[in-house]
Image (cartoon, rainbow, N blue to C red; front, side, top):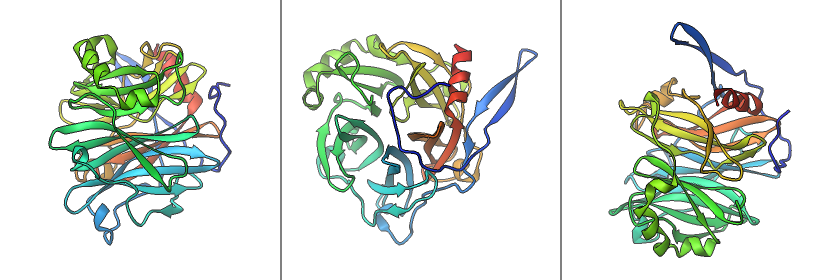
Length: 338
């Protein structure tokens, strides 16, 4: 049985969900495509109309498992369309047992005047690092914050190039001694390496050289019809025996957001070992097909408990949802597609 390499989590009870496979005709043959199974109680987080700071949407949740608790940070959109981050906690992965009355992070400088968006959470060096999109009149930039307790947060500033950049995640361990991140410039996914968090915070010269040779750092670009317009990283990578499991979103020409998966080499994560040719999750439910932005599933968080991979995603830029799959089954599918 394949396991998560070097990762231990306290067991918590998650509902047993049946995974479905979809028949897909291909040149006269029948192939079976793995699809995630949605939690029947979706959405798990929806806007509270009495809270003006999240009146216009609660979606795209980043997650992390700690001591049997799943912490969620979600994007909340206020009446004035400014985004902030809210906090929620789940003891079983599908029910919310605690939720913040006020945002835990919001705009505090000109470089994020229009909002803090789409958080991802990584545990590294006994801290939780939150990458998020800082939006201003100059466009989207990638920013970093940290916490040790999900009560007190420290903003660490912008960490990316001075150009439109989104969908940034940090690997949960150093690779060859380097802090490693994935991000999206020009509708593709790239990789970057840093000596330390301090180096990441003071990386202006690094990025100037980097963007001049952007193709050298490319991991994937659009390849299949369902992701023809652009691709972007989802949650932080998960280390497995077969490689780094990375979920990502792809956008089609007709603006439908779907989710896929890929495996990256453990020692050289710029090398793609396998990649789903078809989406593993796509808009089907009413709360995914109709909302603030229709036809969107946007994965931002994951949790692996008792061999089950739970994927936390935003539906139609309005609600938070979860879908699941046996981890081994997804890895087998990716291995077979190699």
